[in-house]
Image 1 (tube, chains in turn yellow, red):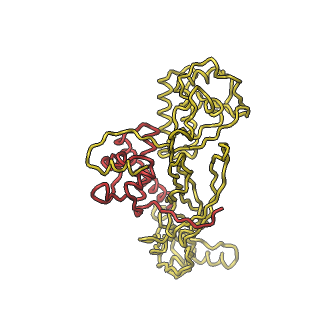
Image 2 (tube, one colour; image 1 turned 45 degrees about the horizontal axis):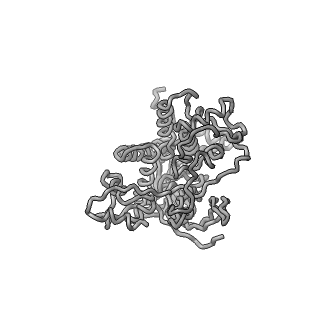
Image 3 (tube, helix red, strand yellow; image 1 turned 90 degrees about the vertical axis):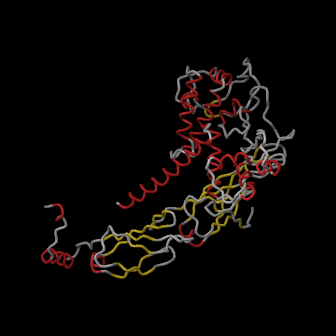
Amino acid sequence: MYDAILSTADSSQPTIDVPIVFFCDNAAQTVRPLEQGVDFKDYYKIMGVKRDATQDEIKRSYRKLARKYHPDVSKHTDAETRFKEIGEAYEVLKDPEKRAAYDQLGANWKAGQDFRPPPDWDAGFEFSGGGYTRPDSPDYSDFFESLFGHGFGSAPRAGGQGGFRARGEDHHAKVLIDLEDAYHGAAKTIVLHSPELDAGGHVTTREHSLNVKIPKGIRQGQKIRLSGQGAPGFGGGATGDLYLEIEFNQHKLYRVEGRDLYLDLPVAPWEAALGATIKTPTPAGPVDLKIPAGSSSERKLRLKERGIPGNPPGDIYVIPQITLPSADSDQARDLYRKMEQQLAFNPRSKMGV
Amino acid sequence: MKTELLSGIVLDEQAELTLGDLCRACCQHGEWVVQLVNEGILEPAGRDPSHWRFTGTSLQKAHIAMRLQRDLDVNLAGVALALDLMDEIESLRALVCRLESRD
């Protein structure tokens, strides 16, 4: 399927660009029966426009919101959800036919209200035939499906027959691992839920688990690609891939940055002042760290190549935290008093006071 | 239930993908990838398309390029600009993070 297409890139002859469309998204969409109530969605509110907005205003607002919430660009935590919502609202409002049909549901519906489309709700509208505008439509809400998904207009969605071939969808998942897993490598079992068509053509959710190797030296945010572990193809199309994004569980001791680790290490005032060799933890086990005399909290100490393994391995930066013994006994108070009397120490001397 | 242990490819600077691998992973035809290379978005090793080798990072960039084109109607020059700016934001964020954690 791809070899034929690739040859055009290898040949030195200029080729005519024939649009070849691959269907990457869900081959199987969940279509809910119409009787079931769904949450009403206020597409105008989502789009941030008034109900009498012009098509141009809707388009402008869509463009602006799409840029703002695009999951690749936005750092909003709910960017993906918002982006899908905006796309769905635009799918309806940009199309005068769908918009008119949506409008006649009335303005009294509130977002989130339990909604059932009235019987023959779309009767009396002339449709030009395009039920779904995009064959690779993303997962629209149940509300959208209840209105436009099933039998809206005259053209049913392309099914499995008639030379329709689709590559399976890529799946994406996040995997939480411990920092220690990156030091030693690990095997993680992940559970995936994917929609699947059964023999009768009904959509069911299949749960399956995969046992995945987490290689030693993996870093926060890196992706692992498991080819052929995504959704099955359609009509003989190839299977999609599975992408796993690695995320570290927050560690109680270390902050992770790339392959480097940062560790706040409490030290006694005399260890910092006089120098000492102290035990410090690392994910690979405790090591001896030499603290030079006259250390301060601002000065980081580097444990070379003790960070996350790799080529080159990361380092561990130790930030000494000078910790004062509490003056909770006569003896301790006595020692503090001696220091007060015998050390000419003014920590504010640089402030001129 | 599968118990077999699967090993994937870590998408980093090392993974070596051919033009075909990249096309299959992105569901796109070869010419589209050639356009990304010509725009400087992807920088494969190797002289000509049949010898090109792409890193895992290239695959991630190609995926982002694909989505920006599809979702925002950005042309390739715009995609290249967006990717450069995203890299810069990423390194500035890391810097802010480092400076904040010093306090």
